[in-house]
Amino acid sequence: MKKKLLLFGLISGALFIFTTNFSCKKNNQNYLNTLLTNGRWQFASLVVTKFHGDTTISTDTLYSNCNLTQNFTFNPNGTCNYTNFSCLQQSATGHWLFSKDYLYLMSDMSCQDTTAQSGTSIPFQNAQIINLGQYSLVLKTGDLEQYYAPNQRRTINVYGFVRVKSQ
Figure (tube, rainbow, N blue to C red):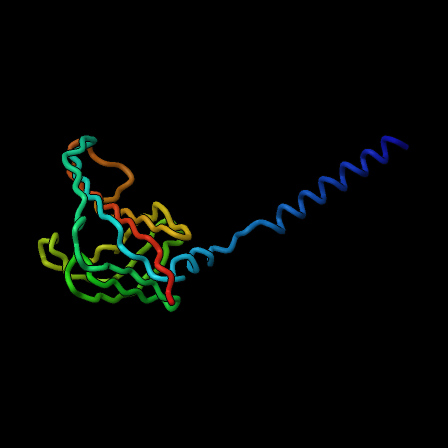
C-alpha cells in the first residue's frame, strides 16, 4: 500500500511540474516587438573598430561631442525614423523587421552619412542584436560574417542606444 501511495505521489508531482512548466513557458516573440516599439531610442555611442585578420588596427568612438540629439524610433506598423543620424540635421524614414530567428534587425532606412564614401548609407540593413532590453539597445553592423579570412580587412560598428519613454 505504501508503494502504491508513493508511486501515485511521484506521478502526480511529476505531472504537476510538467504541466506548470509548459503553461509558464513564454514562446511569444511579440515581446521583442513591444520592447522595440515602446518609446524611442536615444543614441548613446558608436564604437568603430577596424580589423586586419584577427588584429585590431584601430578603435574610435564617434560623435562623442555632437550637440544634436539622435533618436531612433520604431513603430508597430513596421516603419522607423532616425533623426540626426551621423550628427547631421536630418530625418530619415524606412521600414524595419526582425530576422526569422530574432537575432538580426533589418531596416531599409537610407541616411545621409559623413563617413560613407557615397554620402548616404543604409546603416541598419543587417544589424546583429547584441542587446535588446527594457532600457538599452545595442546593434552591431558592418562587415559581419560567420568566418573571416586571415588577411581580411573589416570594420565593425557597435551602436548603443538608451530608451526614452514617449510622453
